[in-house]
Amino acid sequence: MRIYYPAKGLRGKPYRSDIINKDLFTFFEGKRPRIIPSEEKLLAVGAFPTCSMDIGENTDSEYVSDKGTFYIPKSIYMGEVAASGWAFDYYFVVLCGDEVELRYLRQDGPWHETVGRDTEVTDPAIIAKMERTLVMLKDANKPVIPESVPVSRQALLTLFTLMGVTDAEELADKIHAAATKPTECAALAEEFDYGDEPKTGWHFTLMRLALRDRHRLDWVDWKEAPAEVFASLCDLLPPGAKEFLPPWDNEEIYSEYAYPDDVLRDCNPILKERYGLTILMWDEGGDEYMFFVVPVDKVKEAFAAASELNMTLQRVEDLPQETTIKIEY
Image (cartoon, rainbow, N blue to C red; front, side, top):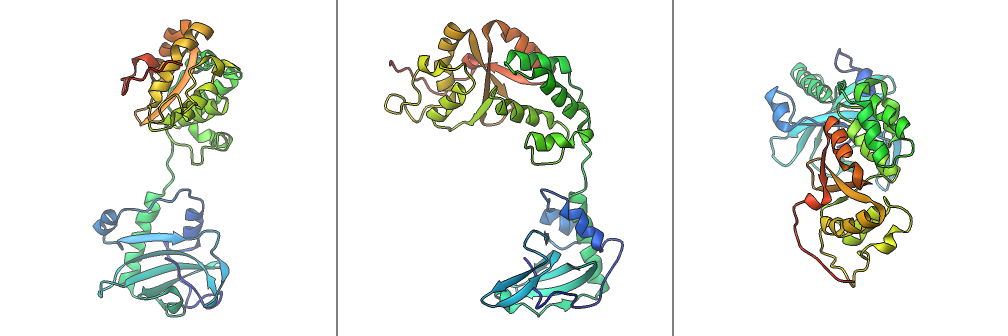
């Protein structure tokens, strides 16, 4: 929901309180993603059952349409179903320059018919309800201070080395810092394309992203096509390894309905025999297949390092077999 002004500028008197002010907008503009409290939580404290904000790139700007030219201010809004049952009563905290004002608007028709119909909110009871809503909205988006997670740098280094990471020392330092000093490592989020603020336990996500970027680990969805699973596996292997593996990218030979573990299980014996490598799975409890390769004679070391890092590993041959597929080629 958004409010349209006939022109830029305040439509009523500026309003300010400890809760409703310009700083409110500064708080939310720095939040990605923004969390909206549930209707149940809002109603439990006597707040409006719905709330959100319109402070994106298309706000604080002129809007030209076939209905006319209007102004879209930044706004935080809340509301509830009106007595009629098909219309909504919305209450807006609107930012115009450095000033904030409170506006009420009933949505009971097309957006262009609502322009200019908003009125000023002056009822103390309504303002108090708006503030209760905003307190809940801010609380849901308050900064989360990540806690340090004790992680062995040596275990990280051991595992990365076994996986063939060329910059294992440097990567171990970064992941160790992300785990033990998350509040000091905001820059890593951008480096590893994390897309969110640092949080407790985020070092595992950074590990996944960093190892995939280095072609040392990959993951596929449980229903991924065999050809895609095969391509992901080959990306982790020595050059030319594909030529010695079953041609899972040939749909005329292999079923497109095979599970990812069929592909990995079928390729693993050849990897062991020809390259001395074996596939290990990193199980995070989801529906993905996350895998990497290590030397066959280093499997015990890999499991020991992973255990120290609270990672759950599985041998590919130990995975529960969903289907049995054996095709001669």
